Each structure stands twice: as structure tokens, then as C-alpha cells.
Image (tube, rainbow, N blue to C red):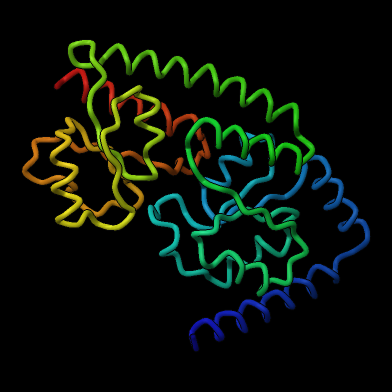
Length: 266
């Protein structure tokens, strides 16, 4: 608790410094900055690359994220005073409810940004809904609609490719971590059970093993280790977050390639 109070005081002090500095520039400089901002659209700061990728898909051009792509479990991230500089100048701040630091960032920065909570899930319906919602917020509805159309075609193409790799032409039995069920949907697999996000208990292990899944679709970003040891099921590590390039479609392509290769080799 004490650590949190120190962090908030530090961030608040930095915010005041940023505001003071921004007020000392010449009128010409301020006007140029406003013109640059208008030309690139709203300034969007996302807590992670996942929200940032959704913003990019929705048509935002000026997008940054606070948590680096290299950190696979975003809630573990410790907010730094330097992160405040991004938030202080933002028009929109995007976050998810499972990220405990999101609210503190805005409060400490004193930002006037519009805070938007996103329900992060890579299922096609929720991804499209998030992109549509952000497109309306940013005033980029046409760009968001174009991306959604491209995504729909990409999803169908990947689904057909993975389906063609089904062993023996039959949908493989899989169990999936609760946040990677979208990958089972993409594969058209027979999902016989789910688990998580906590580690599988002995009772759950017995129940899931009895279903005899051939594959386990684990969550790379919050893995609890080997899920069904000794069952013979092949475990795949599915990523939910995109890379630093903020290419959300790459998340689906990577998962499809992983499953296609695993199914074909079984």
C-alpha cells in the first residue's frame, strides 16, 4: 500500500512538470503541435499491445502501448513514472478490467483522456465488436469496417486450412484454457473441456483426462505448465497478444499454423 502511495505521488509530480513545460512553448509551436495532432487523428494510449492492436485495426494512426510486448503477462507490469508522459497527452486510454494499474495511471496523470474498458477476447464476434466500437469513438468507422471485412475473410481462410489438416478428416478432440477457446473455434475442433485460468486441480485433471483430448490449447500469456501430464495429449502454446508491430491478424495466423502443423503430424 505504501509503495502505491509513493508511486502515485511520484506520477502526480511528474504530471505537473509536464503540464508546466507544455505551457512554456511559443504560440507557433503550440499551433504546429495541434496541426500535427489533427493530421494524425486522436492520440491513443493503450495499456498493452492487445488493446493497441485493436485501436490500430479500428483506424487509429497515433497509437502507443504502456506494457512492452515482451512482457507476456500484463498484470505483472510495474507502472513507471515515464509511462505518465504518454497518458498526459492522450485523447483516449484503452484498458481491460484485469489490468489493476489502468485506473491508477489516469488518476495519477490527471489526464482528460476518455477511458475505454475493452473486453479482451480473440473470438471473432468480440474482436469485431471491439474494432467497431473503437472506430466510432475515433471517428474512423470506415477504416474499422474495412478491417473487419478483411478479418472475416482471413478467419474463413484460416479455418479451411486448419480443417484440411484434421487427422483422418475428423475434428480432433481438444481441451482449451478458457481464454484460448477462440483457437478451438478457429480449428473447428471438438472441444471436450476447458480449464483455468488457475492451475488444474487433481479433480479437474481426472475429469479432463477422461475425455481423452488429443490436444491441449494452452494460453502462452498465463500458462500454468503442463496441463495433462501423462495423458498423451500434445500441448500447444497459443498466444493472445500481438507483437510490437500491433498486427492482430498475425495472432490468428500463428495459431492456425501451430494447429495445422500439430494436427497434420498426429
